[in-house]
Image (tube, rainbow, N blue to C red):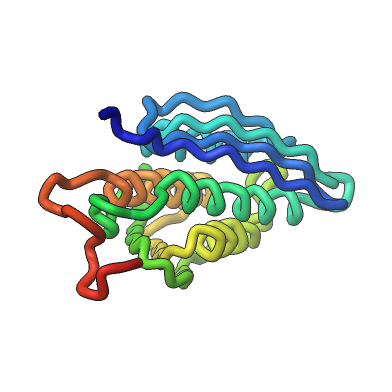
Length: 198
């Protein structure tokens, strides 16, 4: 009997954004991303590549207003896709962590797929935006992901000067930590919890 594929298809349409997403947790790092925010596209491609996830995501948003709704709603959809793809969490490691260098930046990320959404975020940015991506939206993106996925997510800038490096380090560290958390361990027969459920 073949193992169930961990793939999610999510669509979300509001008056502000129209998003479709397909996420395969057991992919090869392939991506096809178009959000209208070039730096966000770059970050999502990095997320897919470094987490070995296959990601197809398209977003049409009200960028004539600003980037806020697009970035936040993409976070909501990606978090929802993670939750749906991971399924009942049987056999997964549940926890993941990464300390990732990106040139002068050093980022810590820790993930717990506990079902309890919490974001711990500690970073300082030096500019208002990178490309058309407002740096204030980094927190909002990961907040949306953590709450939609039902995950405990901590991101901390340990060192950094260049905002591009800091932000890219966060997306890559998150990808590596999530890849670890969703990976299967043959020693885990059910879910990794003394309660018996997550």
